[in-house]
Image (cartoon, rainbow, N blue to C red; front, top):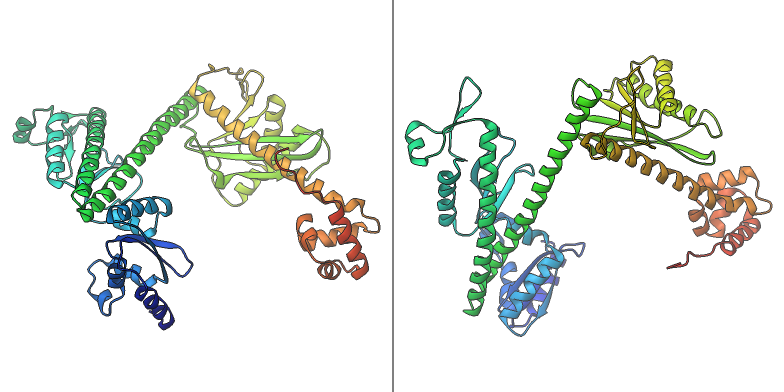
Length: 498
């Protein structure tokens, strides 16, 4: 520990009162990294900084925290119960790094169900290993938890972490040996689909148990506090907070799994309706946006497995012509996109969707012919009747308004439309800001270009001083002063709530 930091902390600790309160440990950036409570602030906080204390602490996380403590703050309260309540409130408010780590410490058990396994098992663990599995807990009463899992195995016929099922030649599974089959009383030879239904039922049961135990823990915490057993009450409070967090994550996990099923159904439906070789895991959609032929731009959005993949979004400014021609614009951007992929030997999407009808589809095909690339599956989506247009001799296709495949195409098209309009609006806004320079007498095109190239935007130019403007534009201090005055005279701050 640096000497100046050590001296500063020691002085603060010496000045602490022998009274209840809450202490906040901070790092060198002033961030709160730990919140604790104390019956005596002086005794509790000083224990962190006693000579030789760091080497004797068993938990590596505590030792690591002490090494980065740069400052501390304390809040006095009237009693230890008040300190307990304030500690919990501040932990929720600040979410300090080391309080989170301690809550997830290896003292308590979790139940992990890995849905990536062909036959998901209910296994015990003390750490969260990934975000793809579902977790239940933490559970403070390991004995009760193990009894519950044993009950689940008998009631639902699911596998625990120590199970070793055998796969049969016909693709089904034998879950247990013959002796255990008699003990558990469940059908022993089962398909993957039937077993997963058991897992879903067991998860619902364990989720209900978690909520029951949550109420039990709250009662135990209240009892411990009433008996002035504040260490026990604080420990239970941390378990309650972690269990509440797990239940929230479980709801998100189930929502994500539901959405995944919906997306998979939509992709499978598109494969069938569009006669594709496989579900279109990668889809790209193009849209053109302009205002009466000005600020013509295009967008391309990419969906992976039915969800927006924003890292692969692209936007285009039309370069080959000036004016209003959606077909030429579509031909240009499609050609630019897939020439780039072909030159870099990158994979094509499984399905390309064009916002528009036959004219837009023809323009996209023309682009592929021009770059000499075989197009992947290609369709248009005409908005008037949500009609799917094919580039070949197939008749237009109209799916039901609630068809999952059509709904996915609509989400894709609407996202492309939103992305294109946002880009268009950004360009219009930038042009409006830059047009302020057109009205300043004596500022010609070369000087305007030089100023914008140097400052990057009107806002930065307006924020610059007279000397900086003169040097950047090569226009001299007198004209720089006049330009500075006009920029600020023409600038009206945006009014609020108009």
